[in-house]
Length: 204
Image (cartoon, rainbow, N blue to C red):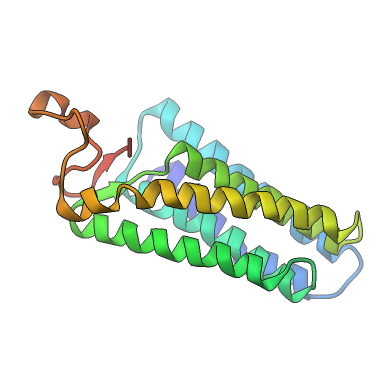
């Protein structure tokens, strides 16, 4: 396991601590929870940069990274629904999209393909994280809940736009078709889908 993978695992391990800090009432607990959440999410940027710089990426990291991000962000969003900061239907719509795309990832994995996050998918993750951070500060009383809700509205829109971006590729994935323009072994590295076990191909 690379150092970048270890950071990903640490990000997932931070989830219980963040939850405890949000629900355990003491002076400044919301600020502590939000700060640790922000620090944990910052490791996502750092481990990605580290992996690219060192050139040591792994199929394990491709699988764990989006799971850790979703676990951390969605947990905070759900906790903040309970605190009355966010509307439950908005968070439920985000969770539904994440489950749908996770199912697509599992279908791809059964065909020996690890789907990496697309740029739009990375953007939606960060908008969700920003919305969660705004919500945490709203719970702490730093500003009105409406600011956090507008942030979540933007995250919700991008979440489903990026979800549709993945879904449009589903028919080709389930058929096992190669990406358009991919022909022969010379272009195999640029293909959208590969039949090689645990390959790390970037979606086009």
